[in-house]
Amino acid sequence: MIPFNVPPLYGTEEEKIHDAIQSHKICGDGEFTKKCNQWIEVNTGCPKALLTTSCTHALEMAALLCKIQPGDEIIMPSYTFVSTANAFVLRGAKIVFVDIRPDTMNIDENLIESAITEKTRAIVPVHYAGVACEMDTILSVAEKYGLYVIEDSAQGVMSSYKGKALGGIGDFGCFSFHETKNYSMGEGGALLINDEKYIDEAEIIREKGTNRSQFWRGKVDKYRWVDFGSSYLPSELNAAYLYAQLEHDKEIYNDRMDTWNRYNAGLQDLKEDGKIELPFVPEECVHNAHMYYIKVKNIEERQNLIQYLKENNVETVFHYIPLHSSPAGLKWGRFHGKDCFTTKDSERLLRLPMYFRMPPEYAECTINTIKKFFARNR
Ligand SMILES: *Cc1c(COP(=O)(O)O)cnc(C)c1O
Image (cartoon, rainbow, N blue to C red; front, side, top):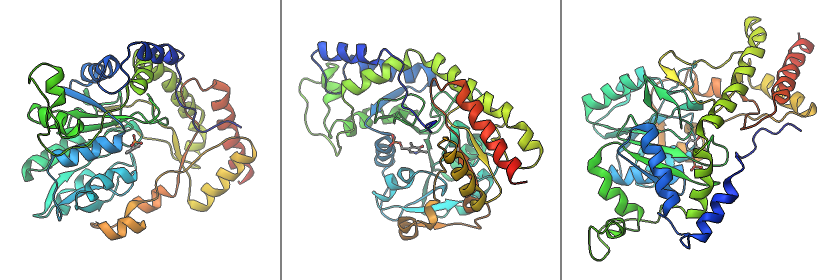
C-alpha cells in the first residue's frame, strides 16, 4: 500500500534527542527550542517566534493576546481545521464563516468586508495547502476596520506571498509541526508575533502566567504569577526532533517539490481532457508543496476514485468537512452570504500521497492508477 502520509524523518533526529537528554534539560525553552525559534525568526522575518505544543495552542495564545471576549465575532473560512474556530469559541466568540475561492480553496478576500459588523474583532485567513490567501486585500480591510489578522499558517511553513513569508504578515501567525506537516516534532507548533508590543505578554501567557522567561534572561530577580496563562511550551525532546529537520529545511522542501511537480506534470493530460482540476498557485505566491490535491466532478466520483485507488494499493484522503454545517459550527457559527463553493468544492477534493522521501515510483503509480480510473469510466 502506498501510504498517504509518512511522518518526516531526516535521520539525525535520534542524535539530537540524545544531545537533549545529555544536556540534562528536557523541559521547555532549552537550547533546541531557542534554535527552532531562531530558525523561524530568520526564515520569516518575524521579530519573535515561540515554539508551542501545537498550532491549536498557538491559535489559542493569539486569541488570548487579542483579548477576544464573549460575543466578539471572528471571520474565517468554513473550509478549515476545527482548531481555527475552536481557539476563538473557547473565548466565547461567534464564528462568521465566509465562502472560499474555488481556485485556491482559500477565503474569498472580496467577501470579507460585507461580513464585518460592530462586533467583528479579527480575520483569520487560512493558507490552504501552503498557498497564500490574498493578503494585501485582507490587510487593507483589517486596517480600515481596526481588526486583528491572525494567519493560520499551519500548512504554510516556508511559503511566501509577494516575497513575505507566510505567518509573518498578519499581527500573529501560527505554524504547525504535527506529523502530517512538512516539518515535524510529533505534536507541536509555533506562534509568530509580528508586533513587538505583544512579546512580553505572549511569553507570560506561554509560561503559566509567570514572568519566568524574563527571569531566565536575568531581567527580573525572581519569577512570580503576573497574569493569566497556561503551559504552551513543548519539551526539549520534541524541539530536538524538529531542529534536526529545520537544519535540512531546503532539502526537505526540494524533495517535496519534486513530488509535487511530478504529480502536476503527470496529471496535465487529464486536466486538458476536462476530467479533473489541478491546484492553482497565484503568481504572487511561492508554495511549499505541502499538499497535492485534485478535484473531480462530484462526491460520488470521488468516492469511486478513492475506492479504486485503494483496490490498487494507493491510499488517498479527502479533507475538511465544512465547519458551518458541523454540529459545533451550527452552534457557534453562522455562514455569511451564500455557500457557492465551500460545500461543493470540499466534496470534490482528493489529496494524493505526499511526504518527504516518497519514492518517485509511488507518484508515477498514483498518476497511472488515476488515469486508468478515468479511462475505464469513459
Ligand atoms: C494542522 C492544522 C492545524 C492544527 O495543527 P496542530 O499542530 O495539530 O494543532 C490548524 N489549522 C490548519 C489549517 C491545519 O492544517
